[in-house]
Each structure stands twice: as structure tokens, then as C-alpha cells.
Amino acid sequence: MTYDPTNIFAKILNGDLPCHKVHEDDIALVMMDIFPQSKGHTLVVPKAASRNLLDANPADLSAVMPLVQRVAQAVKAATRADGLRVMQFNEAPAGQTVFHLHFHIIPIYEGVALGAHSGGKADDAELAALARDIASEL
Image 1 (tube, one colour):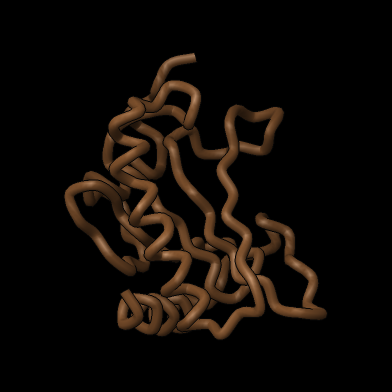
Image 2 (spheres, helix red, strand yellow):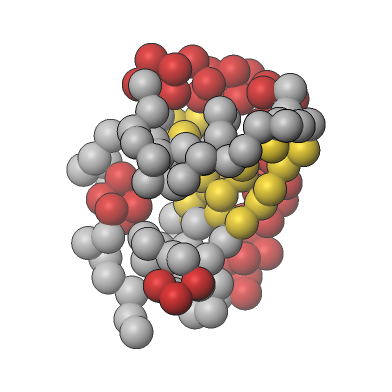
């Protein structure tokens, strides 16, 4: 399969669609997941065009991973989560629904089950507040 430059994350990266931005630099855009599995569910979306990990340029992966780590630390601090799950999916059978490489950072709270990813759109005001809180920890 090839990369589709009209995917939703490419449209967000191009400024054609809005997002709740946490951080942006030359390497990636960090934004809130609008269908979160947990309070503070954040996405790191590399700017380099690749479908997923399988076709990504190793140099691009090397550049983005320190940011994934920094964002994970910021999410944990901002949300006071008990733990974190960092996930990345490759192709539809593995659960990938947007075919642009991205990393999920999902806060885990002791005794609280994760919601379904398509369980409903989060409140925009709450997402904006979380984005500010996480950005302040970066």
C-alpha cells in the first residue's frame, strides 16, 4: 500500500482541518485525540509522509522518538496518570485507522478502564484545557 496524502492527519498538518494543538516543531505535530480512550490521550504525528512504521524513513523515526518520550513525560505530569500506554498501529488488521504514522500516548489511571477509541468525541473545551496543561509541561 502507498501513502495517501489526503488522509486526515495530512490535512491537519497542512492546516486544512483544525486540531487541539499541544506542540508543533519541524519534526511533528502533537495534538489531542478527539476520540480519547482516556483523559489526556495525546497523539504525536510526524510531519514526514509515511503510512506507518513499516515504510517510515529510519532517520525520521530517530528524530521523532525523543519527542514521543518528552510528550509521554509531559502527559504523565499534566494528567497525574498512574501509568502510560504508548501505542502505534501498522495496517488495518492491527487496528490502524488513519494511514499516516502516529503514536498514541494514553494515560492509564489505576482502577479506570480504557474507553473505546470510537466511543464518542470529547468535549472541545476539555481538550483545549488538556492541551494547554500538557504544553506547559513540555
